[in-house]
Length: 426
Ligand SMILES: C[S@@+](CC[C@H](N)C(=O)[O-])C[C@H]1O[C@@H](n2cnc3c(N)ncnc32)[C@H](O)[C@@H]1O
Image 1: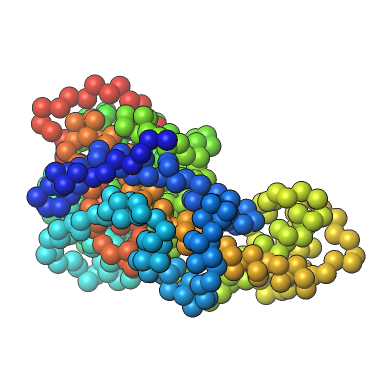
Image 2 (image 1 turned 90 degrees about the vertical axis):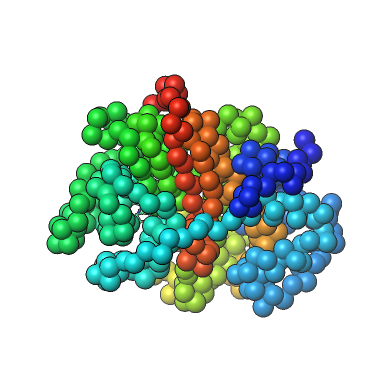
């Protein structure tokens, strides 16, 4: 395994940005070298394999109280402090994962628009719009939804917007809102997973935006930008693991194709595991469900006489109002297992609670790698654009409390670059 590439101080630009390739190589080496901490899923594996090689770390996390685990789960920096003495390379990993905040233009937005967008979504939209360079001419919004971003952009820039969206109802209500305000926005109903004629004269050049276009959708957006010689683009990627073909992550850039790290789509999903939006009730429900699933896992391992995780389908939410015994009956039926009469449900419920206690603590270690992995994936996109003749910056457009999917990639096509990629749209 290659040693981590230390970041050289010259890798810093005037604004404090790190060189993208150096950053990528540093993250790649560290993520690959320490993948036994984050690739195995604690929910599926009883006890982490690393506990024998790192007994002090295992004891330290096992000793954490529930209150400490709660704090570390919501404030990653707290657990980084605890983990630091065990991981001499942690500072390097965190340093390579740190992003500079995007500078923000002082824009004013119409209060009419805010009424139509839920609070947190509107804060994301306005932060994203304010972090963009001044725009003019033709701008495409990919996966526009109801067009909150398009309305914010047209209010603050001299542009004509095209909103591309699959959902007919969102297109209709978005167009109605834009027409009511006489905004220059045109909706195009389009399945952006299907081959899309980005060479059409009408769609060439201009800027392309993608705020939280999932997985393959934003990858298609990048490819369409290159093919359609877009002047620039700005994306906030999300759901890197979704809508992709195959079980493995397909690197976009030459740098990622030569990387040490190889990823299954399951590995990739770690990058978006953080949520900041769940209510206390939702968190309590999730906790109950996890404990039940882990209790059933202990039961099925004994029943099948196989020390192996057995995935169960998603649960009808009403079932959470019932009890553990009913849950086991449902899960057994789903997996075609016969439950004997004499099962000690109290014991298996307790085993579920105990496994859950360990899973939460082991997840803290795993989550040290969550943001670095997300940055690695975003860098793959940034380096792909660089290779295709775009000048790229990678910043944070808002705080993680507004959305943890807060990475903003902005690419501007270098005037002398020609598209020789021969890429296909999907
Ligand atoms: C997470 S939402 C983001 C919406 C909007 N950009 C925003 O930030 O408010 C993703 C959007 O992608 C749309 N979408 C999903 N699959 C699509 C596809 N195959 N083609 C076009 N749009 C799609 C959904 O209908 C949804 O509006």
